[in-house]
Each structure stands twice: as C-alpha cells, then as structure tokens.
Image (cartoon, rainbow over all chains, first blue to last red):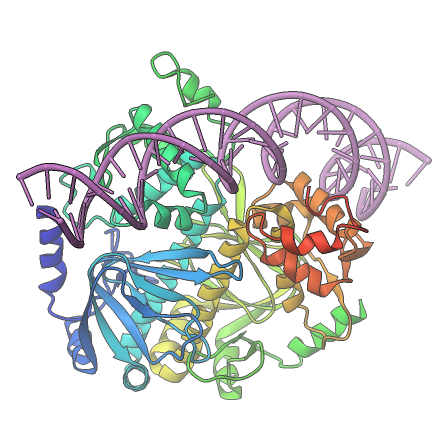
Length: 266
Length: 266
DNA sequence: CGCAAATTTGAAAGGAGTCAATTCGCGTGG
DNA sequence: CCACGCGAATTGACTCCTTTCAAATTTGCG
C-alpha cells in the first residue's frame, strides 16, 4: 500500500501527461525514461482531459470509431482482442506512462478495460493530430514510444511462445517487476490483475496459472504474502526457469534435485 | 513465377522507397495502401541507397549499433530474436513495403536475415533523423506505418497463442495470402520460407508443421503443387479451422465427419 | 551421379487442457 | 456481529496433442 502511494506520487506529481519509454537513437542508461519534455507536457495538457475510471470500466472497444487516444497516468489497463471464438486474448497490460488507443483507419483495433482504478488522459484525435503536425520534435518522441511499445509486444510474444508454463509465468513475473515503480527497495511484486487475466495474457488456462504459481512456490523460487503479493526469493533460479524454452534445463536442475523433488522435473 | 515477376514490377516501378500500411485516422478502403507521397519518395530516395542481398544474407544482428533503418522493396526478410536457449524465434516476416531495423537506444532489438533474394533501401540514421525533424507530415506517415506494424505483431501473437496446430497453420496461410501481391487472380499461395522458419514463426516444431500441412491437405482444405506452392481449395473451411482456439469446432466439423473422418476431430 | 541438408514419417512420453469438485475470499443481508 | 451465498481460485483425475528422438525419404546442388 505504501509503495502504491509513492508510485502515485511519482506519476501525479508531474501534473500532466506522462509518456515513458526508450529513445530511438540516444542511450539513456535507465530502463525507461520520461520521453516528454516539460514543454511537451505544457502543450499536451490543455488539449487533453484527465479521467478517473473505476476498476473494470470499459475504455473503448475494438471496431469503435477512434475518437481519442489515451495516456495512462495511474493504475493498470488491459488491452485485448476478442476472438471469433468468444474468448479474449490480452495483448498487453498498460501501466503509467503508456499510450493506448492508437487506431487503424479511424477504428480501434483492440478493446481496453481498466484492471484497477485508473486515471487516464484523453486526447481527442483532431487536436492531437494538429499538434503533431505542428511539432515534429514532439511527434518524434511519440514515435519513439510507439517503437518501444512495438518491441514490448515482441517480448510478450516470446512469453506466449514458450512451451513450459513455468517459463511463461517466470517471464510474466519479471515483466511485472520491471513495471513496479518504487525504487527497487523490496523483492515483493504486486499482482494487480486476476488469475484469469494472467491466463489470457500468457495463453494458458487459469488452472495452469494456479498450478504454476504453486509450483514456483514449492520450488522455493517465490513466496506469496497473499494472492496478489508475491516475493521473489531466488532471483537467479527464476531467471534460469524463465530462460528455458524446451526441456533443456534438465542439466541445471539436476543439481538442485536433492531437496526439491516434487514438481520440478516430473 | 509469373506472379512473382509481376509483383516485382508493382514494387520496382515506383523506383524508390515504398512504405505500405494503413493510415491512422483516414479510412482508405483498401487492405494496405502506399503511405508515402511522391514528394516523400523524392525526399527519401537521395538519402538512401538500394542494396541487393542474396538469400540467407544477414542484414543486422540484435545488439549491434543501429547505423541504418531498412525498407524492403523486393523479397522477404525474417526478423528474429535469438533466445538465451540458442534457438531463434521469428517475430515477423517483412514483405515489400515494410520497414525494419527500428532500434532502441541506438541498438537493434532483433536480428534480420534475407529469406529470399532481397532488395532493400538503406537509410543512415543521421540523415533520416534530420529529414524527419524537418518534415512532420512525412514523419506522421512513418508513425502510421509503425502503428500498423504494432498491430501486425499483435495479430502474430494471436497465431502463436492458438493451441491447435491446425489453427496456427491456417492463420499463417491466411497471413501469407494477404501478402501475395498479384491481383487476387489465383487461390495459390507461394510459401517463400522453409518449414523450419515457419516453425520458428508459429512456435511449433518443424515436424508438427509438416504433419499439419499434411493434415490440411488430407482434409481437402488445401493442396500442394510442390512444397512451396499451396492452393486453397476450401476457403470457408480454412477460416473455420483458423477460428478455433480450443476444441469448440466440434459442432461444426461433425457435419462433415462423414466423408473426412481422419484428422479433423481426433 | 552422389552427398548433404531439408523434409517427412513413425513411435513414445510428457505436459497442458478439460471437466468436475472443493475451498477461499468477500460483499450482502439478517 | 455473524451467517449466507456468489464468484474467483485452487485442486484432482484423465485425455489428448505436441514434443522429442530416431529413421527413412526427398530435394537441391556440386
């Protein structure tokens, strides 16, 4: 809770739009940085409006006319595609500093819904477009953001492609941790979304998600304070697990087999 | 072969850079359109250089300093990530009109290699950057392209997430067909990449790819003129197969069970 | 013509999905 | 304040599909 509050402070103290990511051509050292300059924010703030949404609120739906683009300031949003099948596949979770609602031919490509209580900035398309056309430098920073998002989606598809459930969940936890805003104090990861949302994100059944969390806990790699708070106990092992795509890690895990016979290798 | 030649004509007749995709906010009707204006091409051509590459040639490698961005004019390129595991996961195939090599903090995020003989335009970063900073309208069209690519990657991750191999391959074929340039004359799809490339793209073993192609052929959905030329025989059925994520299609396929007992539902 | 790589086929085993039952968490109402 | 009840989450048992390993066949090229 304390951590959550300090995160809010980090983001809200900016008092306006916030877009984080990585620059295209300059190296910043940090994991992600604020891409907008103070001037950018001064230009964006007046053409956008801050909106508060309750958990579960729909933001837009795939196929709708795209009237606005959104910028997450606080909370977590899921962006998903509804399959002909009826099920939904979550393409990405959006955290503070992310941009969502980029359309194609004026229509939203995906649906979006608040996973937690959320604050977003909404930018109407016409205003945003004219701002971009007049300001190539700002537009370039947004281009950087979209490229970064493109690469993030690529990382997601690596998660989805992994066969072993352990590796999927391990990667998912690493992804979550990389979005934990508080300054690296703890090894605890807050999990804002439901098990079924996780399942739709990593492409497994929700039962398998449960089992896998349990398996990681039994292995002593992570621990659970409660269902939504996991602690990373053995970071090195988590990385090993995340790295294995097939069954290759046998050689490695054999060393540890002695004390943890149960679920690792069977 | 004739078709391949006419495609070349389509692209090369433009005599310069070509970026195809969908506009962000205007609807064009067509599947994809040329995003660059004649003026754009006139500006881009002098700062880029056309390069011919043989099949299998490396274009860049993940982690390298990103000196240039590339634009595919002719042929097919695979863009892939090498996993710690050593295996490679193909993130996307790039066709004429695509852009590749967008870096993050000055480094390439992925590796790229020519799948067929290829012609690409190479743009050095400094020149491209100054052109963009001076021309917001051109930059906006490139932004549209990157957004379109973002959405394409999303579609790919839907393929990867499908459990049944039949659905993966069906979606893959549809994707391939959507990139066949000749004007919809035939139902034949040219498959430019190897089976193992397909496997790395859809996240299955190459053996499973083989078996699945065979299964589709046995079902009478597709036919093979040779290993690289497939014909779509029953388009409706292909779509049905592509749509099924779990085992739901039972109801549908039961109707057809009579004549095609083998591999559909078992 | 012959070798090497790619592709296909076969048989066996493991993991994840499905279905079904149980427990847990939490808001509601008595 | 406690009991109830609904949904989410977990657990268990079983089946099926994909992977894996191994071998045969084809393809392409020197």
